[in-house]
Image 1 (cartoon, rainbow, N blue to C red):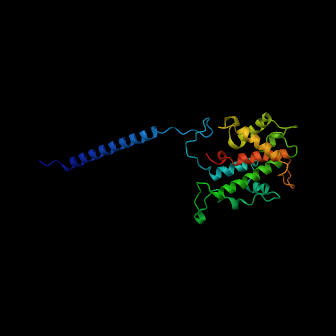
Image 2: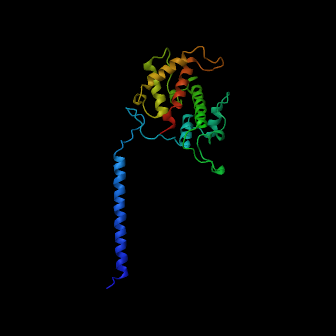
Image 3: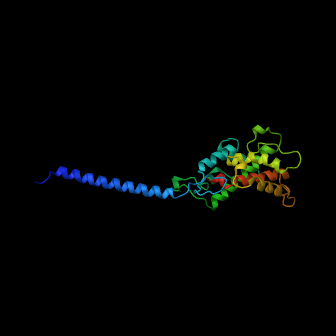
Length: 235
């Protein structure tokens, strides 16, 4: 006697469902074994310095927001005017948006997810403009520390030693990189102190038209180093 067609269809559905479930369980086990065999990625700035995960560019919008905050929370056009200065360190935001990686769908330009030479040059120019203006705003004159945007400390009266540098450098490190300098994976503070000493003590390489004192030039160089640091531009 021939079985009803409905019973045959039900049997086929059950068999196919069982096969799909078996394949799904097998694939899950293979994926689990694959990831179980890999070490967990360590965080940036871990004590061992083993950054095994893939670093990615900070989105251009996040970079711009941070940049505006470091200028004191000004509007973009106000930052554009302030950053330009007499030496024209800053052009216009329109000149930088595409090179920072922002998409322009009107002309079919996609978002940039990898760095390139033009992007690095843009980071460089924006960083120099920020640090120079911060030196002028924070370190020249008698602005209260609580109203300073980047250099939220006073310069020492005499010579600067390692201990005095460490205290001030930690403030900058927290501002730009978001965590205490002592937690950095290398002896970062000592290396930046050497940079400060080299720049502040260089009498021959000073531009005759420079408006900065030796100490201000040293702190500007430290600021350049932090704003160029990969941890400021990647995550």
